[in-house]
Length: 454
Image (cartoon, rainbow, N blue to C red):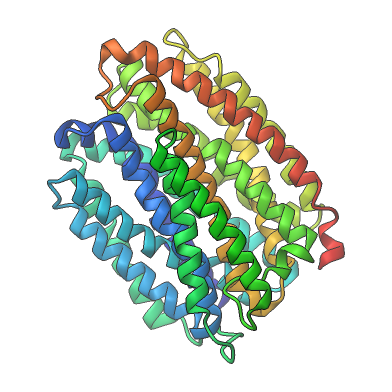
């Protein structure tokens, strides 16, 4: 039972991760065919993240009440069907809309996957199992640029979406045929529908508002989202069965600071792949396939080291391992500030290898710390909260990038006359990301001893 559960969750994570990195490498091709500017291309990724971040905690809570296997199954089905529909789109707006739907399916997968693994494996084996799940995520990220570039170059970008459909069908069959039982430790509690609506609207205001800065609309939406967040917290303290138990943050130091470290880590690192994909194809003149072969360096190292980092976190304090990983990432980002049109490809690959090691040392131990710090009936919420911090971080990372594109380049296609402005915007982005990652080191250290919380 444990083995098949780990296989199903790992394959589900691989499916979602592969699609994300493969789409990134295909963005220039998508932009040329659908005549999309730099900001619109950013929305191909951001719409997916926005839908995911709105849905993660509601589906995590719903899975604790209704059943985690059920929500996981629906998530894989939605993801697979949306992939099929995406392969036929001929409109930029429809593409972005379907990526939004796919983001909902992704939320259902990531809100339940880690919770199911944590439910099945005891604490002494949990770090190893979580490390394998994380490794499969990074395997998807590794193969995404390579296979995505190969498919895009020889069969067009639509083939990326078609290629994931067989795997989605296999996962659905395995869940229905091999995964027995259900996990719903909070089935006696009620779902907070009002809290879910407030939560979703709040995050839309914050994330979409941030992406529209410095426009007046962006400022207004951001202010409304922040106000909504305060109201959501106050309401959550009073409601008997809130969508998100605020006590997890108020009374659990490990949970609170581990999630803050997750937020800062992904805010600093997610847009690196997006920026370097554009850099390699626009500035260095590489085709999608060769650009993908270079970008694969980071997730390959992540996939190789994540199981080891997970096993180490069962024996060594996760705070130490995760903080070292954040420090390595901060060094890598600080070096990327100096990348220019004359930088060698070997230099880029070296930085990606370094940051892959840092990411692995951070993610598996940090995941183990979060999931081991909550009670069993909160596994779904714990998993979803961590995934939400990850997705919000991704949104902020892309939001910062699109804001800089808007300021430096504007809503135009990235053509040779705009290359100097593109390089200027990436330089500023890496300066901001370095600062965020450095702050993440202190958040990681501040969580305290994880084993005391356990």
